[in-house]
Length: 66
Image (cartoon, rainbow, N blue to C red; front, side):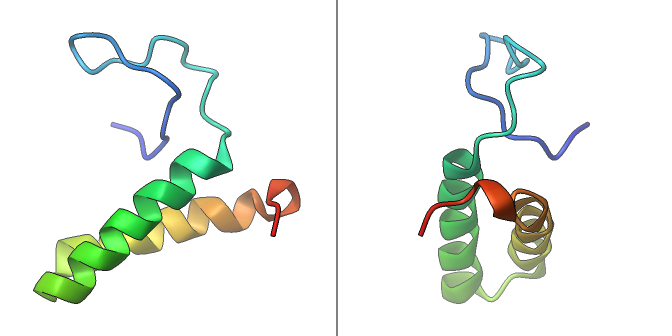
């Protein structure tokens, strides 16, 4: 299991290109989804997922645009 968000997946939900995962927009979009889910449901798994994505985004901060 990995916390990476890849650019594309096959029918078995396996990354087509395992090196294609350093795209901040993918992580930002998923962070927005988990933030909304966390806010609407107040469920801890969504908060945990959001925190993991934010950790990933912090490592990509030099590649982010405003």
